[in-house]
Image: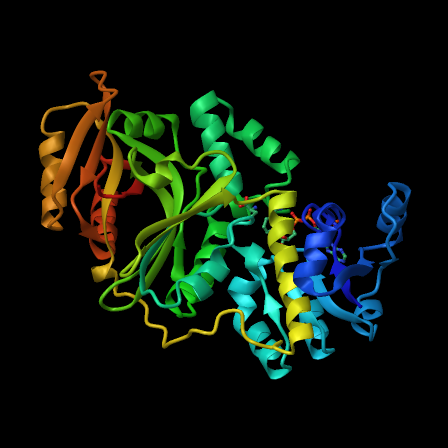
Amino acid sequence: MSVKIGLLGFGTVASGIPFLLQENGEKITAAAHNELEIAKVLVKDEEEKNRLLAAGHDYHFVTNIDDIVNDPDIQIVVELMGRIEPAKTFILKALNGGKHVVSANKDLIAVHGPEIIATAKQNGLAFYYEAAVAGGIPILRTLANSLTADKVTRILGVLNGTSNFMLTKMVQEGWTYEDALKTAQELGYAESDPTNDVEGIDAAYKAVILSQFGFGMTISFDDVKHQGISNITPDDVAVAQEMGYVIKLVGDVKETESGISAEVSPTFLPQTHPLASVNGVMNAVYVESIGIGQSMYYGPGAGQKPTAVSVTADIVRIARRLTDGTIGKEFNEVSRETKLANPDDVLSHYYFAINTPDKKGQILRLAEIFSVEDISFEQILQTKANGTSARVVIITHNMSQTQLEAVKSRLAQEADFQVVNTFKVLGE
Ligand code: NDP
Ligand code: HSE
């Protein structure tokens, strides 16, 4: 028997599925207890359909979603178009039409996940999205299944392949920002709007999903403070190296006494931290938990074949459950009341890069401003002092988000101090 699939979109990730079905068909059929057949593929218009046919893609291309959701033979719909609309409408149509759904669309799941998950549940259908976080790394199922007996206390992750690829090329090979972004787009790593990758938005979507799988708490995208890589300067990179750190865009989800905190920001990682050596398009999710202690899950976070592997694994699981008669369970079955952390409880060391006139007493004045907010310095360094201007770099001891905002607003009132960047610093 074959299980028929309707694909929505035939871009980078979707076009990797036929490769797996062809090259690994025997194993996939055995695992799915069924043959998997791509019965129909939704494309945008006739022009796209003709282009794909001319390129040798021998599928039944359609341009109307109803041709898929009203087809009684299709059991699984795989959404790989990206963005919120029309993906949301199409997924809800598919679920209300009795189809199981697989998606890799973290934007949609982070923002409208609860509604889609509820619709799937009401209809007794599966909605799986392993590829939505860290592409080829099977992290969601690991958190939902393998770590079910453990209590996760913190998840740190290099969660965006595009920005990590760009940072690696810029730092290690001196590429320009523009060249690094263009190559990431050509390699199929970037989102259709790469702003999401470079501004930390894509990683923030993933942090929302990790909050659900790691902590059972459903936070909203607006609860995730996020900052991207576009403000990182060569000076920040050089200072980080000099002080024994590596800068990475890191997602950080942790549970404090008052609740959960999730943020994405450029972060100084000690060179010895396992995440510091995660380079190129590689992602890693570093989990701290009371049972295992520390564990890290590493692999390609983007790209056609790695992502298609995660998507196809979801399809296989659905096909298998259809045969076994166990379909309809939620992807993540653990949930509890969502409580957001009080900013007083969210502690970190911070890096400040501050420009100031190069004159006597400036460091003393800075020490006064920071100590009014009860913040103490761990390291302080003056660079680029030329008699006119100087850059002061400070790494603080642990301080709270409340203290961070307070000291930033104090510094903003001082004409002599211009804060160039503030990044988190992970303690040893
Ligand atoms: P692509 O942009 O390469 O592919 C999406 C395809 O869907 C495009 O061909 C697009 O056409 C088409 N499409 C858009 N709207 C419609 C529509 N209304 N009807 C039919 N087709 C449509 O994206 P990716 O393959 O890279 O990504 C797909 C999903 O996977 C996204 O949600 C992404 O976030 C996620 N993902 C991607 C990863 C990656 O490495 N690329 C990794 C992990 C997740 P057009 O180009 O004309 O707009
Ligand atoms: N654009 C995303 C990234 C794809 O670069 O990580 C994987 O979600």
